Image 1 (tube, rainbow, N blue to C red):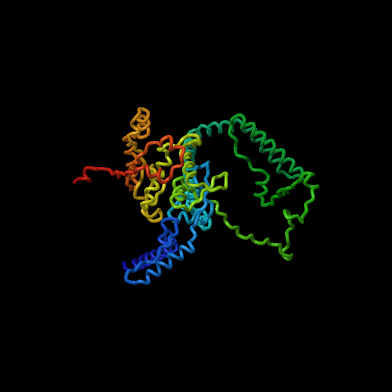
Image 2 (image 1 turned 90 degrees about the horizontal axis):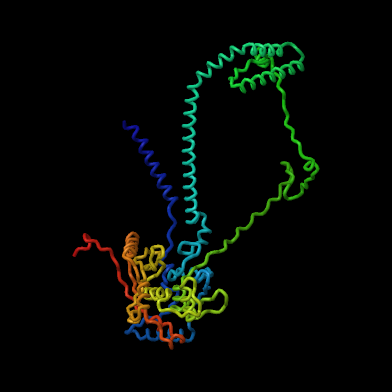
Length: 501
């Protein structure tokens, strides 16, 4: 009993070794160092002064020299270019270097051919398939499995029908046999005549006469067979022919050898082919000179067809808040200043975009969303779109490359100023803008609980509209933004058994 245990152990050891080898070969590639790649939180270069050491007077000299060097030769500030598209109401960044910098320094924008990070070109360069191609393959395999399952079900149904038909046929076989015996008895005279004809055909005669008689007898036999089948009488088994008799006597059978002939049309026969043409080349014999082998084509450089899409809030923050983005309109080469960008973005926050003749409202969708975006970006959060979770924004502590979002932001306009309750028209406007049902809040909260995110209701106090004298003036953007106040409320699901004091 001890001897069979040894091979089992060896097999187990070999299996574990094979599994370890496969695990080594299928090991995932090493992850990049995201701490080094995303070391800058914003696309801004900072040149700090040396550290001041109070008990070391040389530190003052180092600070003074560094300060004078930056005044005499100020460092260049990087600027990036973006193009506003009125069709998509977004900013497109096409430069590959700019795309990588905006993503690595602050996670701005998203790739138009990727899910989030612009990695379309890197996936094309890899030997493996991209995530989108893997998804397409899984869908194709699932579709083929469904077709194969449907085909097998159809074959099973056809097999059952065939078995039922066969069982019904065997029950009627006995009746058909009785009828065939009666028919054969009545037609015995005809069968004898046919047998005599066949015997006479197999007699001694010249080869040509034998062939003619055999063909005649076979022709009559086939006519008789067709007549019987037409009348519904089963065909009797065929009788032995002269070939069977010759086999019995041991004589060799002479068979006609048929040759296949191919005839071409006169058009093709008269056509002449140029064997020197590149399409039809003559076949070289083994001893002839080798053919000219075409040189392998050089691998083509894959062109990057992906660009970065910036939302209106991200573009305005980079242009006005940081001053590192120059936005060009799609029909001109002039850089739009922040004041023109604000007017343009406010008009395109509606669908369809409003015309220039319509005055801007204090509760424009762009103003509400940008105030919230600027607020949380100033606090150090990485703000991303939250449309896939039915919210306005998602807040990341460091970015999507490090962890999932912790908070989901829903913007709620608040009309607390007395101006919005002065007239019935204003009260009706406020009611239509702030009307939310309890089921809406319950659904949003339930979704965030499923994805392990905390729901935050961000209330934005809407200021009253500007007076008639101030509408025509270009008010400073900072003053306009300072008129808005933000209050955020963290909503949590309350359960009695978990939230006891």
